[in-house]
Length: 193
Image (cartoon, rainbow, N blue to C red; front, side):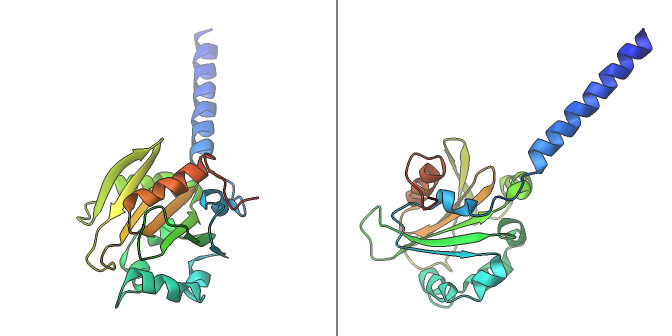
C-alpha cells in the first residue's frame, strides 16, 4: 500500500513538474501578435521577420535619426548582450501619436519573445547595468528605463515585458509606454484587426 501511494505521489509530481515547465517555457509562436501592443492610431507600422530584416530596412534610418547624432540601432543592438533574447523573432515598429506636446516623433517597437520571456525578465531584474532602472509595474508588467547620454537629448527609452512580447518605446515622455501596455491589455484598440 505504501509503495503504491509513494509511486502515485512521484507520478503526480512528475506530471505537475512537466506541466509547469511546458506552460512556463513553451509559448507557441503566434504570427502577427506583435501588433497587439500597437495602438490603432499608429501612423506607420513596419513588420519584419527578424532583427536582420529590420536593420536592412529603410525604417532603420528613421530610427537612427530618433536615437540622435552618431547613434545607430545596429550599434545599440550589438552593444547589448541581451539583444539576442529580446529581438530574436518577429518585430513590429510603429510611429505612434503624441500623447504629450513635443517636437520628436514617438517610436514603438514590439518583438515576439515567447518562451524567452522568463529568461529575459530574470536577466533584466538581475542586471547590474547602471543605465538600467526599474520604474515599477503597470498592471502586472514590469517597466524599465534605459538611461544613456548617447540617446538624443530629451528622448527616453523605456521598455516592458509581457508574457510573450518585449515592448520598447522611444519618446520624449517615459509614460508613453503605458499606451502600448494598455493596448496590449485591450484597454485601447490595436492595429491587430
